[in-house]
Image (cartoon, rainbow, N blue to C red; front, side, top):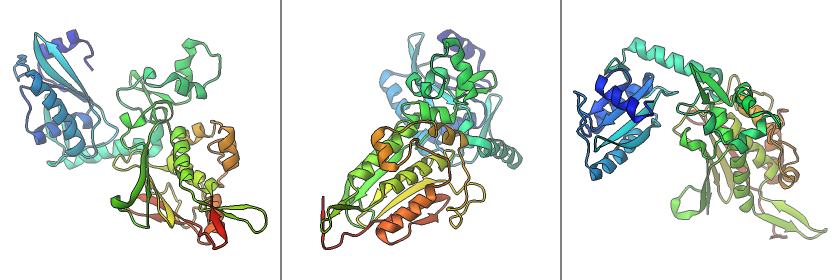
Length: 406
């Protein structure tokens, strides 16, 4: 918004309106949080720090500019729920320093400690119960219909990485046909007059999806013992990247710490703690079915001496319950499921998990998790829901006396 300095200067001369707000200097943290949330709840806008109310550019000194930028980022992370993704830019106009804060229209409804605000004209106003209800309805309906096909603000075709999106379009297409094909595949979507990347486009065709979709990565942790205790944390990794790469890296983490015993009395029989085929199915399910509209949590993979726990944000979709998971099939993110079903696994992973693609879409995944895990450990895995988060617990098999570890 207002990408050229000329356009921005013209807006400054015209004064504040529904799209732009001026601050002479850094306001109180709570007040700035309200302003940012108000723009995010409306159609987005720009806040300029270093311009007073009568459009005079007063500027900030260089040291203050850096401090203000850092504080603004902290406000977006700590004082607004859910956090707001902004874009800051340091500018120099008329030999004076300004901070431009661009706030995109959000996919979510944001609140601060003072409540829910929205931008109306050149001011922010607290929303009435009726306004708030309508905004929640509008944005939640969009997410319920198909969140993975919604647009991501401040993105375009150039946001998507060509080597990644080329996997989903026909080889040899002309350059002028690519945009149309990306639209048909819903990796790009139209938002008004603009063409933006979709949520699925960012998750599958961008190097670091967490830049746009907060917490869209997998956190993996290995503990010594049976409890979550930082003092006994042996290894940890934040697994980022496109979703298919996250699945592969999470599998590598689990494989690295999947202890394998060998039985020697009749040849050599390897007995692992976990079925890697079951873990693969569990990770794929977590990635495909998590609720990406919930930005406050991430997929978490925890390994202990006696069990593996996998947490996925979001309650189960539609009429699926923990009791009928084995027999029911419902996909929260249909577009993501379709894209993952088109990507071929490499030979090593294919042999390990006995399948050709990341997702086969035959509804066999939960059965594989339950059957293969119970066969190894003698205990059935447990699915549980806690605060709209699904937890899967897979129990480790126990080495018997005549086995030796590899």
